[in-house]
Length: 216
Image (cartoon, rainbow, N blue to C red; front, side, top):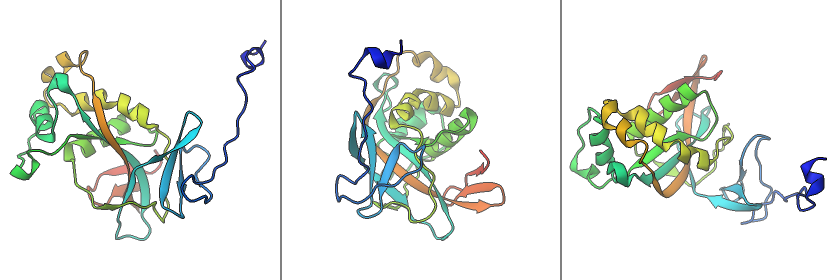
């Protein structure tokens, strides 16, 4: 006998997709886990049967035909690895980068695609954006142009932080022995829509010039 027949508490529920803030209709593709409101420029994630508002920004584009891809920007500390700031991360992963004084107290943010994609490409994107730690100018708006749906939950992005850290290390022996004990204290998160320009079969991120094949 199916489990849902044995447990009468398992019932189908319908949630009105109306913006909890302004009452406007929420929009999103069928596979999106985040719905957006174009009226009050807000983004909402369903958690335990209720909509919770996400902090989100859109990085401006000079190209009116840009495609916007969503990324999670996660502020976190790794006490076991002694990573509290971005300079701590640079030192532990042995990145060939010299930071000025204005970076001394810069908090550590890990970047993760907020969409599902092949593991190799996922790690490549996460590593490059995390190492760059670029400060993007953004506005608290929803992209007005074409934007890809959020299909990777923030919780799964948090689970990937250890893998992102390991993939960023140039000398694996400095990181691998610590991996079993490393855990992350997540302090904050932000959903960021980054603009990509279509060039043939490539999507090229405007500020970083990182490219991915559009078919992926």
